[in-house]
Image (cartoon, rainbow, N blue to C red; front, side):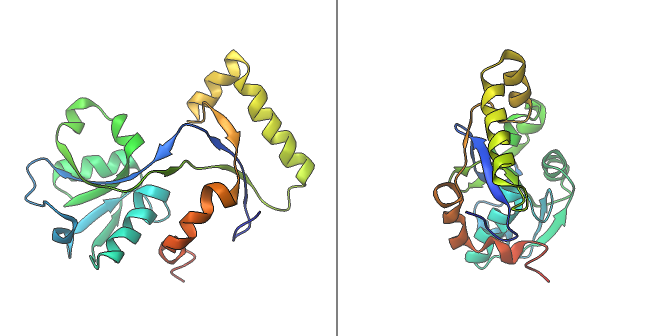
Length: 186
């Protein structure tokens, strides 16, 4: 099943679950998300799945308006918060863990979203079904090979499983994340 703009999810990681996190400096007086109203919050990019879209949807649901500052990467978000260039920052549970301990020790997680399935490897619906199936089989073949597993680990998909829009991603529709995308803001 396809979803606008029509991309068809093919495979995702079976084990990886993503959560959006809002971080502040450890010495920040901010203790709840309502205190971010009117503050500057760094995000990696406008369309970053859990680190921006999901968090901005959550903030909007709480009637918290922030000044978004898009800084280009998760690492830049964490550094902007640590340096005091932003009052808070949006990231992902998985990316904060990869930062150096010296940086992580300067940050406190203020809020964590529920867990969601990870990003899928997707295809445009113009890609013929038989080609999509070959790609899916290719992922599974890589998972059965030592070199292939190393490549899959590098792209954060060490345990590929067939993705299904209805099972894996339809629940996200209820969040109306499209209103926070570049396309949705036109």
